[in-house]
Image (cartoon, rainbow over all chains, first blue to last red; front, side):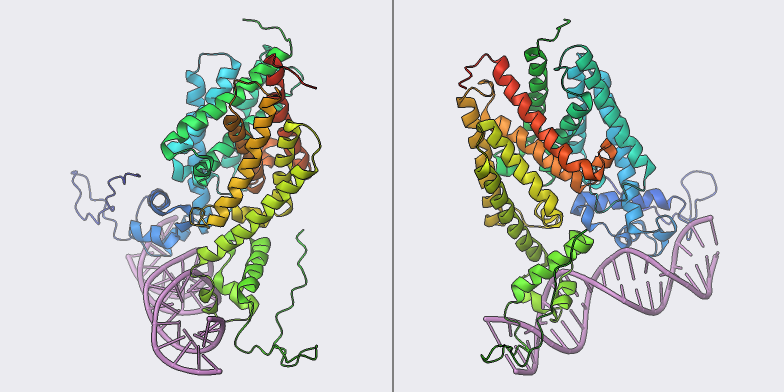
Amino acid sequence: MVIARPRRPPEPASTSPSGRPPAARPYHHGNLRQALLEAALEIARLHGPERVSVREAARRVGVSPAAPFRHFPTRRALMTAMAEEAALRLRIEVAKSLGRERGDALARLRAIGRGYLAWSRRHAAHFRIVSARDEIDLDGSATLRHEVAVVRGMTEQALREARAAGRVAARHEPAALALLARATVYGLARMQLDGHFAQWDVAADAVPQAMEDTLALLVELMAASGKADGAPDRN
Amino acid sequence: MVIARPRRPPEPASTSPSGRPPAARPYHHGNLRQALLEAALEIARLHGPERVSVREAARRVGVSPAAPFRHFPTRRALMTAMAEEAALRLRIEVAKSLGRERGDALARLRAIGRGYLAWSRRHAAHFRIVSARDEIDLDGSATLRHEVAVVRGMTEQALREARAAGRVAARHEPAALALLARATVYGLARMQLDGHFAQWDVAADAVPQAMEDTLALLVELMAASGKADGAPDRN
DNA sequence: ACCTGAACACCGTTCAAGT
DNA sequence: ACCTGAACACCGTTCAAGT
């Protein structure tokens, strides 16, 4: 299912196609860090994150087994760097999905969840890494913490606005609702990652719809609480 | 935090304390399979499931590196056997929690979730294994599939009864509500596993309460949908 | 500054041979 | 039937040495 991108090993290239002096890297790779990240992601796509090895990444890039350790002091550092990249892209996708939404606060909440879920589906390998706590240094990465905090902020903001507009019952704290939304969305993403949907009679090709529906159901229940509350409906 | 159980290597014991003929196992272990499972679980508790190695388990039990392969053809088989044990105990805990509950159908739904979450907290290492799709053969284990199906069955049963009693809006399918409950509960359990709660300003000692509250919130939203529905309240 | 080569202490797994 | 011992092809990581 995963289409391998055309991967062209960075050619010893003693002559360059351009007129400029040749790259000529018999020794110095020049962009080893990024090349290793890409190679590692490729391995994760093909065989899963747990099968990523520093040696194999080095082999694919064409350097010695020890070369990566100049850029990544441990295997964990390599995995964490991949996770940072993933978290950044995930946050951007969520922000885009939110930006496109023209509906009310609860529609925006749903858009956030939808963006998150869509990205997790489209970039399964990358998502697995960003949520593979065993393999990365979550607490040690400021980048990682920041990206998560941004998504959390968007979620709580939407829910604060929803409460202010009487779209959810006033007795529910936005923070509590945000945590519920978070748990549900993360749970859905993980269920797919961990292969649980088959057990719930959801076929592989029905998973996106099931995710959407479940998210929509949660948002609907929140909205119903606003009505049951008898809070002002400002529409 | 994990208290190591008194682990007594199975003593060469050429003389037995009882009057019976000595166990005398210089070669045949007698209960190697179970001993390996326990040793592996101990490693998982101390260092995490990803650090479980067949060799280390063999070493702890006092057999050669090749001995385990008579009982577990691959490392994955060993991990899967641990997961089966975990799934069984988890299901029993959930059933107990459900059995103790004297309230209505939604209270029973909540009891199921509470049992699941409590077990996942108390047996974190075991829970990590049962939900570590990368490390186990979920689809290949009939036991695993069965235990998951049983918990699912309890969940849907509670929601069918809740709908019949008008406790949730009739327009919501029990199966859809069950999937939502499942995603939420699994998401909460995974958030702790993956160390996400700190990012949501939930301190370690507040996690159990946050889980309970979030589950309670979901159930309350479901109940509110029943009221908004104008369905008969048979209390 | 960046990379190689060789080494060390590990893995999972296989297989002939022992009991 | 169950286990050992030795081997193979891997790891992550270190470190002196090369460019």
